Picture 1 (cartoon, rainbow, N blue to C red):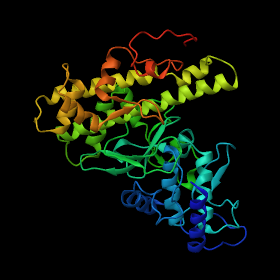
Picture 2: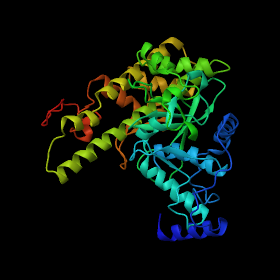
Picture 3: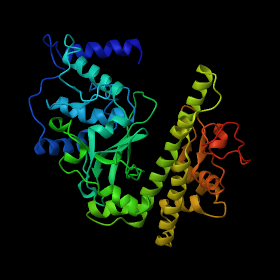
Picture 4: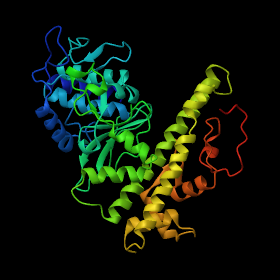
Length: 413
C-alpha cells in the first residue's frame, strides 16, 4: 500500500472512529460467547464473510488488510468479535501459558478503528496455520458448520462458509504471499484428509475465550471421528468427502455436481503444490546465499520434500477416475463430463476440448511467475513417474517438464 493510501485510510478512520480514552483496550467487551452468539456468528459468516471483505473501501478498518490463509481464518473470528463487542482471545505462541486478547493496551492513544487495524496486523504477525491447531479443536463431521475452519498446520487453512443442500462444506481461503486480496470462494470441500497422528489438523472450531487454556478434549463438541474415518478409508479423499456429504446433506449429489466438485478440488490441490515448490526453491536459495551450504540438512529435506504429497496427488487422480468409471456414460452436453474426459482420455482430446479444460483449470508451477501446466499434462507426468519430490531439484524437474531422470547432487533422505 502506498503512502497516499495509508494516509487516506488513517483520515477516514479518524473521522469515523473517534479517539478512545487513555489505557483503552482494543475494544470493550459487552457480551460473552455462548451458544446464541455462536449461532449468530455462523449466520454472519454465511451472509457477511464475503470475498471482498478486505477489498471494500466502504469498510475502512479492513480495507487493504494484507493477509495469507491463516490471517484470514483468524480475522473472520476477530472481526465478528469486534463488531459485536465480544472478547477475542488466542494462545500466545511466544509465551506458552499466556494469551493475547483485545484487552491489549498497546495502542490506547489511537482511535478505536486504528486500534482494531493494528490489532489485526499484530494477530497476523504472531499466529499461523501452526498456531491454529492450539486455538481450535476437532468436531464431529455431522457437526461441521459455517465459521469452522479446516487446518493443515504449517500448510494451509480454510474457512467453512456454507453447507449446501447436498452436504458440501464450501470454503473461502486466502493464500501466500501476504498481500491485500479478494478471498477465493470454492464450492467444494477442503482438498485435504486429516492425517496428523496427533490429531492437530482437520475440521476444527475456535475455542471460546473462557476455554482457551483448556485442552482440545475438554471442549464442547470435541470429536475424534474424522481421524478414525480417514484412517479406515486409507485417506481416500473421494470416499472421505462422500461420507461427510451424506452426513450433512439434505439430498444426494447428482453425478455432474459431484464431478464438478471433485475436479475443482483436484485443481486446488494441484495448485497448492506450487506453494511447496516455491518454498523449497526459496529456502534453498537463502541457505546458499546466507550460509554457503549447497544442500539441505536432513531436517530441512524432510520439511521441503514432497513424496507423501505427490503420492496423495496420484491417489487423488485415481479416485476421480474411479468415480468417473462408476458413473459410466455421461450426457455429452455436460461440461464437467467433457472436462473429465479431457483429463483422463487415453487419446489426445480435440483442441477445443483441451481449451475448455484449460479455461477451467491450469496449474501454476510456482508463485509469482506466469508458468502454468494443463491438468492433463500434470496427470501424464505424474503417471509417468516424472515429478520429482527432491527439494533440491530445479523447477522444471519438480513438475516433470524435463523427462530425463533427475541426478541428485545432494544427499536424499
